[in-house]
Amino acid sequence: MKGVVTSISGATVSVDIRGLQLYDRVYIGHARLSGEVVHLEKDSTTVQVFEDTHGLSVGEPAEGTRAPLTVMLGPGLLGGIFDGLQRPLPALQRRSGDFIQETHDVSSLDLQQQWHFAAEKQPGDSVAIGDRLGCISEGHLRHPIYATQAGEIEQIVDGPLRLESKLVTFRGGQQQYAWENWSVRHPRFGGHKRSAEQPLITGQRCIDFLFPMMKGSVAVVPGGFGTGKTVLEQSIAKFADVDVVVYVGCGERGNEMAGLLSEFGELQDTAGRPLLERTIVVVNTSNMPVAARESSIFTAVTMAEYYRDMGYDVLLLADSLSRWAEALREISSSLEEIPGEEGYPTYLSSRLAKFIERAGVVETAEGKLGSLSMILAVSPPGADFSEPVTQSCLRAAGAFYMLDTVLAHSRHFPAINWSQSYSLFASRAAKYFRQQVEPRWTELQTACRAILQQEESLREVVEVVGMEGLQDRDRLLMFTAERVRRDFLCQNSFSDDAFSSPQQTLERIAGIINNYRQAEKRLAEGEALADILRGDGDAAG
Image 1: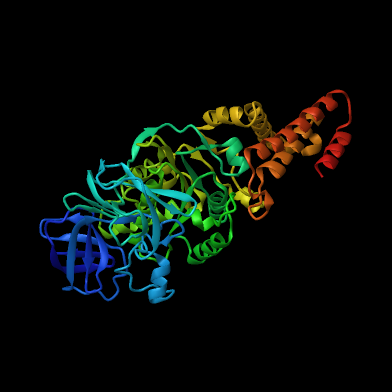
Image 2: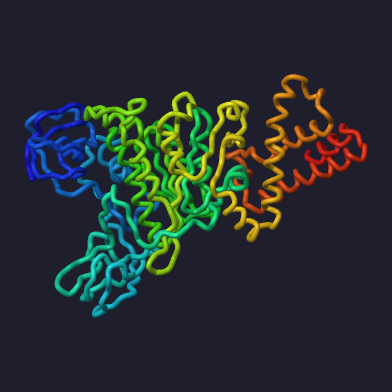
């Protein structure tokens, strides 16, 4: 399906091709810039171009593919660094340098790389769609390959394999490769949905103890500038109890992403393996085309679903959804759509919900459980959490980690406000921790929250009368709350304290609360508060 460019307005281009469908991919101009159909009229089609349209002119050729934007799924994704259209950035850098220009005709996966395929089927076997044909070792994972069509196997590779070569030939001439294409806007579904039953261990005491996540759940992390969203997500990426991490840098500054890639290349995960080996990074910095930024989170979640459907635990980290929503607003404005609140399109909430609902736990056909969890950073302007993006995320998420500017300015990191944050999974996670870690988990959790809540109510009194005006019992509580905040909730991401296992978390909070209860008892027996605090201070030191 061919035509010509009839008008150009920034990245929005009109072509005279008929018969296209919404979200079909279109190649524009002599440079074959990639775009996506976003609006259809009787005599013209509007295409949002994913690349820089500088130099494009009216009358240049356009070609429709009658296929949507897809990603290439197969061995070799782990450790990869891609842009929002799944083009490998290292390959583009080798072609055109640090400032990427030509981006077409680049395969997402290295088709020349050789893998070892261990076949589990033989010629003559009949297979149905979804049957496992064999496995490829990809880093620390066994990467199963499933049949994408039914039939009788005529030939199958058993040994060295390049992705450019066919893997299976079926009787009748049909062929299958070790990779497949999948539309980014169409959710993958490799099994039956299941409820989330196992906590996601992040290594952050404030999250795991007070506001836990479950594998397959979604958490939103809103915070103003400088509150530590990126550092918190990077810490979780290093230590989270998952098999695969997909990190999306959506609209972030280029120097931040360069630092992240440099750091990930040097760090190791909790198993001692290079962190990048289990990580897929999708990068769409603020100077990259805005339309590709909008598609980046769908590209990332499709790759995450691919590994989830193998029965692995996957964590998707997005930083940040505000930049994604800004791209959506810019695209909507260029299409002259009626704006909603604060200029965002009226379909912002539904588009976000479609993305967030792709998280969850799935039971595969082989009986394995795979999960896709999401931690989504939001950057509300002026730290206004009532703005549309934050509110839209809250409607679909189960955990809310509010990053407090006051805590960040006081050098308390992670700057999670314990009085404003919440998790809907606390009771479910507590049941697991009581069984697997310590029966006192819920008791200590309740005691910790009570201390923090009572301190919050005493702060107003302290501002009026000072610490000296409080009773000894209240002063003891304020001292204990300070210890909880300083020694328990605060974690340095660049020290050995960056990760805390559930056992270490419990031991630390149990020590603080036990000291508090002993001090309360000594105070009731008439011992002076100064002597008690002096002894506790020496013990803490």
